[in-house]
Image (cartoon, rainbow, N blue to C red; front, side, top):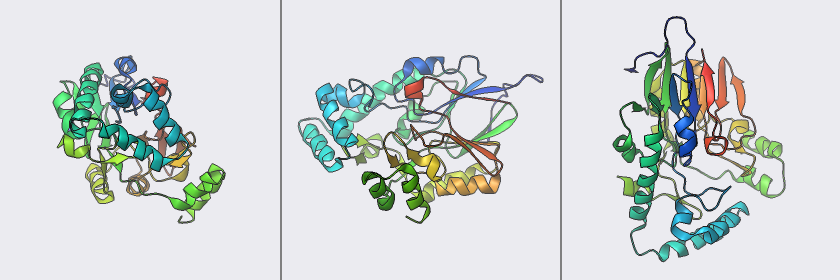
Length: 307
């Protein structure tokens, strides 16, 4: 267990700001800790492609806005095979090794993002982050945690970083594609329905997913954290309402092991991000308040926890 100096003074209320899915929002990140005793970041610092502004991100920097417009249109229309083929054609025109190109672009973003973190910051990885680079860029005052604990203001916070490998959920997805409602799709699910190496995992259209891991490895990190007051992760527990993205019209991957740990250890809070536009942002599971802290890239506002 890592124990840091408590920001709490006497009987004064402790205040922590929490962000997730920063995706290149350097300006917002520099202000995210204002008025707080500490900042917690739940990962996904990298911006590969901004779906709201196609001129922003690694992809348009490499291939231009028009190609970014095209890849977004294909993926939004769920024409994933066409998106994958289109991305492959673009990459075929790049003479340099793809992983080296991506790592250089990621390093540029990390240099700016880590410089923006206030002191103190406690951070864990998202599924599109590159863990081998974090400790290289983290300055004094930024603590990187994964499968570890820290004490803040007299409460114990546990951190579990990364995402899970993403299988398809055919019943639920076919329900949505056929025009079904999110509720119908949820029923389907309930019914049973080195840095360069890290960049080898690519989803449709050429988006890197460097830190998706096996369920067993993820569960081991949860077990290492143990009983805490606040359980912090990048991905949600596997609850249909928490993992369904209403804008993307798909289920993201949640963790069953995380859900089981919440039920077993009963933390005060379980905090996470990953799903940018969730069907439900907040719900109670037993004694635990489960909260999606928001899509910081879009809102620029941290979620506030006081005690």
